[in-house]
Image 1 (cartoon, rainbow, N blue to C red):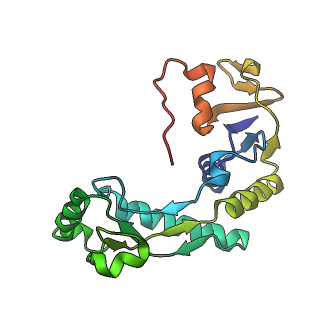
Image 2 (tube, rainbow, N blue to C red):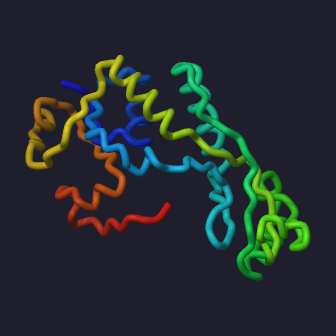
Length: 211
């Protein structure tokens, strides 16, 4: 019996399995090997300033530090390079965004993440008629390389099985939860948008989002 069965080997399922195994837990990741899953085609962008109002979470500093530590550990252990630090340009599409950016520049919490706007004349090569501005502490993760390397690592740990999940095969008892031939103390669904098709969550108002 495993401690945890994880359904889905996207970013969430893979990194959860990594952390659990590091903590000494027995894990089995079950995945159907779908090549067009969101995590496998995602751009993997890291961007602390988001949305139309250009805001950052109050937990941004802690999240970035945790991500940096985790990806460093993964790169060292798996002998890969997946973190790529690159600045981003935020193109203003309306005057409200220009105003919001000026307001952010006056806030101390944003000083480490945003730069002064580039005037429209300078921004013409970028087709930014209203100007643009630099966002720092940004970049991207090579999600395809990361997930492929984690899959190979999980296989080495005998913690990965490629198979289709039949929800009808799930059996829950006081002792364990079973999915086909596998049993565990807990079953964790990391299915992304496919959770909308999961009969165990039909009562939840799940709505897939873009990006």
